[in-house]
Length: 397
Ligand SMILES: Nc1ncnc2c1ncn2[C@@H]1O[C@H](COP(=O)(O)OP(=O)(O)OP(=O)(O)O)[C@@H](O)[C@H]1O
Ligand SMILES: [Mg+2]
Figure 1 (spheres, rainbow, N blue to C red):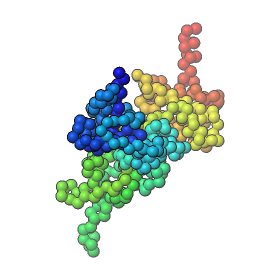
Figure 2: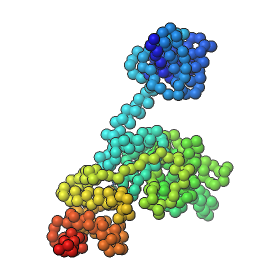
Figure 3: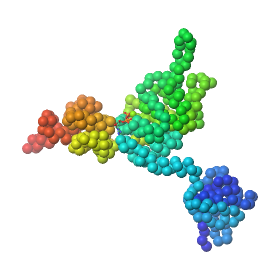
Figure 4: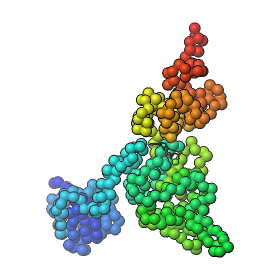
């Protein structure tokens, strides 16, 4: 005999629903079905109904695929939904639609995987605390700023890496003058958190003074969401307004030893959006978009050099300690647009970042080799330093 099991979502002690939104009301408030429905409703799990011939049994399940059909269940009153649409609240449907189409809203100038952008938008709309992570110059700040622009919400920017006095940046200062005596001037941050739907950027949070972390702890905590104006426990507090979204940026990882180690408890208050380093194709697209009049050969050369450093850094024993960032590749393209040759652009904007000690084994030599591959012009190749092949030929001859 065929046995069919249905999974429902309880919506009250005596009511359950299928996926289409059809609702069953239990008539007998002391029977087995009522008991199971009440239990599953309370524990936020599913209600199961198994029908085998004339036998019907009831149970609960922590998960399962919600039933689409509308079976006949004895002892219940069925109300079917006429339309085929699911019964999600209107705002939810609107939000889902917005998130789904949000890829189109990403500014063309910002290169970022669609999924990451979608996650970023969704998290902002849901008022999450967002932490953008990734290596230097990969677009963390740019992506964070784009959110505020695209959502058209009031935005506030705080660079916490640049402030040595977090108290005055986040809370304010006490002043004194003869007329007024002592008075308090509050920081812009105090206004920011009281602005409904504001997007508040906490740039370079990982570099912030530990005092900033402490001050922000309650502000970012889901259950607290207030700013305390003084260390004293009974000092006044300011509530974070509804709809406020915090977006922080951080360089996290062993490449950044200079960065202060972020407090685990603070980090826990964020969802993480990791920015990826661009691949050669994305880098080429970006540079072409930014400098449409720069020739393809130059753009290809930059993308190749940059890509070479990024590939090297991923090897087991990299010969360099950092890769060239997108910020730097954009800068190189702008120099070439202004008439610099590739080796000139590299010399002023790339080489200084790479250690020159160690001669031919130095980090700088490694990068110079990547660059020299693209110096076709004889006049630009003034050193034969890297022509290792010729040297070998001489030795074996
Ligand atoms: N993913 C990207 N898409 C487009 N442009 C980018 C991207 N990453 C970097 N850039 C370019 O590099 C510049 C610097 O980017 P941004 O300031 O966002 O980097 P960051 O990750 O915040 O760096 P830092 O860690 O140094 O703060 C941008 O102005 C832009 O020109
Ligand atoms: Mg930044």
